[in-house]
Length: 366
Picture 1: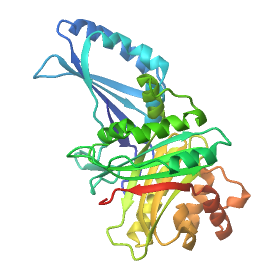
Picture 2: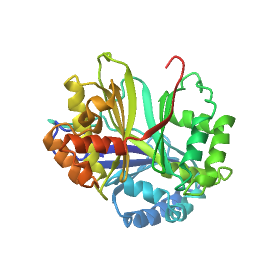
Picture 3: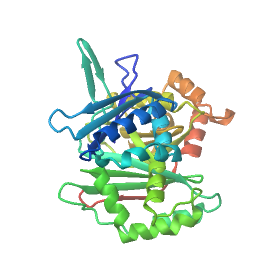
Picture 4: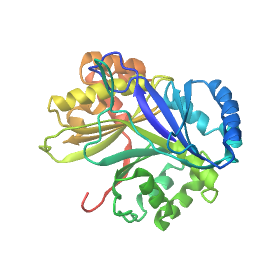
């Protein structure tokens, strides 16, 4: 499946993600003699998919060069309803009629960088220009197990960085906040190849097996379907990235901030933080880089700062300036002790919502 994010942006100067739309593309190689069966299965499937909340439209395309090759595309209001549906038992049952007539499927994923129609120009998220793909996984552990989970996750041996001639692991940063674990990875080359490589490494498999008893969501890594479902639900995509072109003037510190988002307010929180970070980089602040990871109501902002976060808590929190602080405060589930409009409140917020860095590992030449 190919997924592309199309953002509904009302202000072209604020092209940060505010209401991302999703384009899903499924490439199918239909078996010889099974074309009619495939079309009947698609016709049945499209009516069922149309009833799924968040679905917008579908297209069925056939290759003009090879009639056995078909393309199914669908558009969704945002990524969350699609991801929730595709992980469900309902989806697995729904697509079974396709299995007997499709020989192979191919999965590709692209983000829309620019869309034009006449004089209209839409610019999407910041393009990746450093060759590094950023992705995160998040899951929760049983309350009370955090010290043991931290010990396990901090003590494993690093896997081999080189995946193949095209792909290598560059950096892994692992954080803990309450009972939520976030593992952020940076990969040069093919992210999928890197994740498959890591999953096969014995030291990583040993760690994953060791934390299994402490997970709130049970999984069986020896069952491909169980493992696939868990990691799909754990995926926390990077939806915005901005970085300074200038070399930092001070040693760089890495932080991750977990935002207590009010239900349904994930998209506006991401949009506001993205605009704040873009402005901060343009103004030459100590913000070296920011990557925002988002799925549903889970928003985590990974930042590199020249210096310490305590030197400018508002910058570190993404709440510089009274208007932004007030707007962000309305989108988050905060009490009176975390008033982002006050120096005391923003410092308290940063202290309470900065994730604990468990381990941060970079390849020798990253």
